[in-house]
Figure 1 (spheres, rainbow, N blue to C red):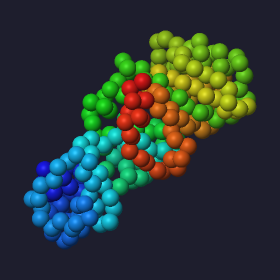
Figure 2 (cartoon, one colour; figure 1 turned 135 degrees about the horizontal axis):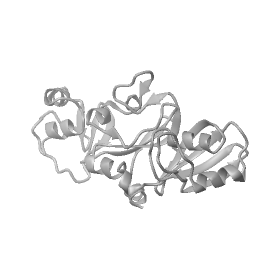
Figure 3 (cartoon, rainbow, N blue to C red; figure 1 turned 30 degrees about the horizontal axis):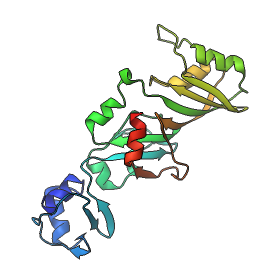
Figure 4 (cartoon, rainbow, N blue to C red; figure 1 turned 45 degrees about the vertical axis):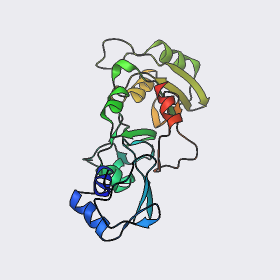
Length: 233
């Protein structure tokens, strides 16, 4: 594939903008500045530099983000910044989208991808991907509340009770809860239905994929093969 097409597919702008980057000597491949837009390169393990930042060619983008509070999972946010503002412009430009959503005030593990099949597979209600959260509650937790969550609570607008796949106490006011659905404000509503109130919510895990302790709030990283396997369960 020629260099212009490589930059274009990786989100570095329009074809005209990509040609300009190359002509201005701002693109380096294998340590050599390349100023010819139509120079061909093999894509296997291809890395290149744009303005001194190294990139590896990836046919599809699979990312995880440690979402901080105060960001909306939308390209057209209404009241806060978009989570896409936390990504380098090429990633946002190549069309990555959130794999499901977290509320503005909910923090933690968020997946993003430009692979439509991947997004659908991990958001489809039929797949019932377990998601584990750590909830800070207003009142102290007790076994009665945990049992209500495990047995199922009836939420407003729902015809049948919804049960947590798991619920345990991590602290006096810290609840670990796992759900298999992704209904609107589900965890917060379940906690309220069990007789408590959710004051803060943090997603720790999707399937077997846990948010790394080393990934700071607002930071992102590529999903490696091991992480993708964990998602497949």
